[in-house]
Length: 263
Length: 263
Image (cartoon, rainbow over all chains, first blue to last red; front, side):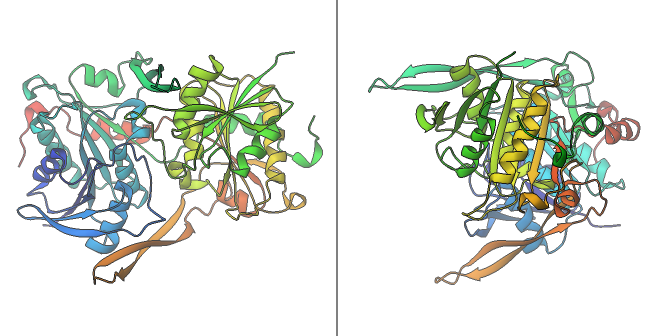
């Protein structure tokens, strides 16, 4: 039987409870190796570190799991893990479990999903996990169970090298979770507003505030699945080309710029 | 005749030559308003500022162009511009002209394209522009011309509210540019490596190095267009759902987790 290599990373940092939960969930499925940021990197998007050298330090995280902390971003962690720790591509990369939701449009802002997308760009099948709970006492047990169930299945499949999933787990007791559901990314987002205040010197400053609004009322989205107590699974890709618009523009835009003048 | 409102932003900061070139290119097409970061924000990905208040300061950038610098990221600039400067959605948002390429996979790492994608998420048609030249003496004149030609055309069209383009301009004299070409995003990326060095204390550190490799040999990609002296235009979308994989997984994954056990 093949012994799988499973790379575990995240964006909340190596000492976050979520990555410990994810590494524990992977134990027994193969050789588990953790390479994660040495500090929280939420909101770093798909940043890479070019202007600074990186540090990579072996740490004791838990029994039977080789673990390293890295001074860079989640994307750096994936790159360094392949090149300097594993010296080969792992069979799968799992990212998370993020402390907070990454469904709908939030995938674009998410460090957890950046690490997963980076792995997928590097031809490593990958899955990002996020729990809909930002509280310190968040219970990762149901999320651990579904991470295990899903990765166990996927390791038995022949996966496309760019395979990538965005998985979100509702913050409810396991007994209430109805199962897993394959979804599309909802068009749901924060409707932002800025609160204008004055500092002691009388100058304005602005705080971002906002309310999450789901503009996408169909039942095949991640937002619907989560609201209905399903674990949502959105298969994702890094090709952002809008092919419908591409066909349209090829027939409607004037592209031969040699022949026309600006106003 | 309708007077258009054109929002200009970037990720290199309000004092970068590229945003001045873009604002100049837009002059005469409508009311041009600049809201851009007060310092370079390259590599910030799609970050938003939640933990700090934001500052927004009116500055003198050029004649006839209302300009503001913002202490936040490119995404923050778009949000603040709509909410606190324009008090309405502009007709179009243009981002750039970036000092360096944002074709192929690089769209995912790009602050320039994050601003454009953010506008598109906010239902503002948008276009990001990048010049394939990172040198201080980069010549923005050809890029200005194509930005003008393109936006002039688009303002006359009925655009989808989520319309978004990623435009790259080759760093060659205008006489050599063959025209504009609608493309798809190439699967081309940096093949990374890390150079391992030792610091004076004998500890390892790593520098990212890499070589750009195009794995995508077809002639309909942005990388092909640029190598052949075309301005590349990739229509982009923020829905990352992989619909092919979605259909496949719906029929192959075991989703009813109540009925099965982990190993």
